[in-house]
Amino acid sequence: MRKRLIAIIALIVLGSMMIFASPAKEKSAETSGPIELKFWSLFTGGDGEFFNAMIDEFNASQNEIHMTNDMVRFDDYYTRLTTALAAGTAPDVIVLHQARLINYVPSGTLLALDEYISDDMLSDFQSAPLEACRMDGQLYAIPFDVHPIVMYSNKALLEEAGVSEIPQTAEEFLAAAEAVKEKTGQWGSLIDNTTGTYKAYTLTRLFVSLVNQQGGSMLTDDLSAAAFNNEYGYNALVNLQMLVNEAGVNPNELDYDAAMNMFKLGEGAFYFNGVWATGTLEQTEGLEFIASPLPPFMGKSAAWTDSHTFAIPVQKNQDPVKVEAAIKFIDWMTANAHLWAKAGNIPTRTSVLEGAAFNELPYRADYAAAVSSVIPNPPTAAWGEIYETLSDLLESAVTKNEDPATALNNMENTVNEIISHY
Image (cartoon, rainbow, N blue to C red; front, side):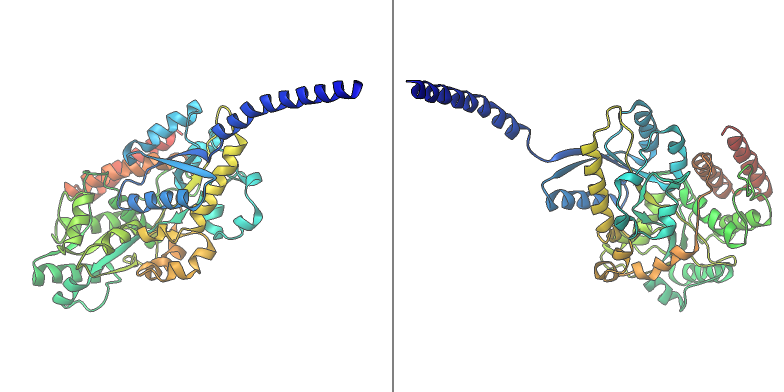
């Protein structure tokens, strides 16, 4: 009887366990699935389609993590991001230009990454772009690329104009541009110089490059004042003004999109943009072009550059599972940056730079060497505002052909005023 009672009790207990086990199993099934991450992208130009394709390929490559990518217009990106970071409501992963890191790290809104990333992963990165992501000895971002300004040349127009070599000095460039306009009827140069789709950033990038090519710099060594109101800045500004006004080889009031479209249509010989334009240009049927590092027009080789980096925001309730997933996403994106190089950007991981997938791409190897002569952004929180403001001031100076000395004085005073507020 006792044995029978024990057996009955055992059956009751077993049945109870099965009853309670079923809902638990069902709940686990309901909550299973990939870790959902959110990302904000500022890639709305020609490189946007390549980045979106990478997100899709990452999601398809595994079933552990699913990344949702929200596009934010570049002009609004940093304003929206700053607000979200301050409120602790930013997405799980963000992209930042390396020059902007200094604007966010001191406020404690970005997660220090050192404890989350393996030494093996870090050892694969080129040291210069990686070290640029460190502040106060800690790593706050991972570099995705390096993207200097380069020069694109239309092969057919140069051949028709009798220009057999890529110009290397300012004088050679002007002569080649004039020959193209005279013999082909097309523009010799396509430098966007007015606000349309974006600010006139190309003017700032070229001005920074030309000043540095002469041995100058944009700010003093202690970052306390402007340092370009001198012969270096004068030569750079006059050269940009002359192409549009005196020589007339470059259209006036040309915006970013128009410059790109004109080059694609064969309406200009020399076009200046970041390497991110390569992917769009090579998809243009019938366009044969050369992509080369920015020539040393005014002396030594030097070119403006920046770097896209990945960072992880500090959240109100930081989920370690999502942080780990975000690191895996960043690792995959940087390790597969040959896909990003299709847009034209230069990868930062050695394994990618030395890999067949990258080196089989046309054009990229032609300007990858430009990385050795890129100009680091001044390490001051004021630089972002200075960069954008100079675009407006240079637009006015070039399109209105302002007196260069007066324009430089105005630029210097404005930059010093900006610095005084930081």
